[in-house]
Image 1 (cartoon, rainbow, N blue to C red):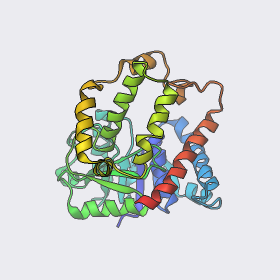
Image 2: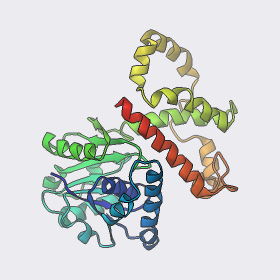
Image 3: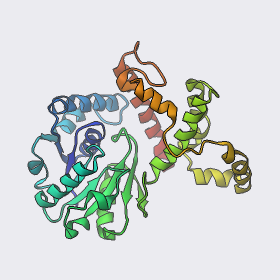
Image 4: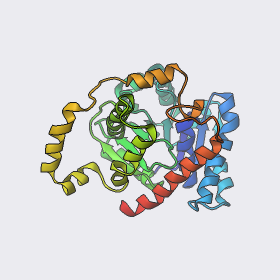
Length: 314
C-alpha cells in the first residue's frame, strides 16, 4: 500500500502534483534545487488552495494542514529515502532524467515504485541506467496542467510492470480523485496530448490563414466541440452522430485541413518575438493591462467549476 510520496521538481507540474496528494491527506516530500522556487512554492500552493476554498472544494481550515503535509527538500537522497512512491517532474532533458533514475535506484528502498511525468520521452531511454530489477517498478504517470485540478492521469502498462504494481498505482490515483487511462503502447505524447495536438494544429492553421479572430476561434471551440467533449468522448459523439455521417464529413474535410508534421510557423514567430503567453504578458492575447493573478484566478475557477460538473458524468 502506497502511503508516503515524493515529488521531484517543484515547478509548474511538480508543485501541483505534490498539492494534489497533500490535499487528499498524503505525506509528501517535495524536492527542488532552485532556491527561488523553494522560497516561493509554498506561497504558490497556498494561492491555489485559497481558490479551492473559495469554490468550496476544500475548507479554509484545511489549507494549513495541506501545506504542512508538504515538506521541502534540497537533498534528493533525504527526500526519497523512506518513500513508497516517487514521481519526477523535472524538465524534459533525457540526460537529466537518466541521472535521476540512476540515483533513485540507489537511494530508494527496494519496494519503492518510481514514475516519470513525461509524455515525450521513452521509458526505456529514461531508465537506461537503472537496474533490471528496478525497471520492473518504474512507470510513466503523466498528469495534465494544472495538476491539482485536471482529473486525468495516464498510467503506462507497456509490459515492464506487473498487474499488481499497476493496480497499486491505479488505486493511489483513484484515491486522489483521478480518472486513470491505461496506456498499452508506448508512443510519443501518449493519448491525451496527441488528441490535443490534433486540435491545436488546426486551430493554429485557422489563425495563420486569417479565417477568424483568436476570440472567435476560441469561442467556436468552447461552445462547439469542447462543449460536448466536457462530458462526452469523441467515440461516443461519433456513435450518436452516426458513423456514416462521420465518414462522409471526414472524406470532405480531411483532405483540405492542415496536415503539417511540425509546429505552425505562426507559433515560431510568436516565440521569436518573445510573445509566450501569460508568462511574458502577451501571446495570442495581451495581458499587459491586467492583473495576472486575477487572470489566473479566473482561469482556475473556470476549471474548478468544470471539475464539479464533470463528477456527474464519470
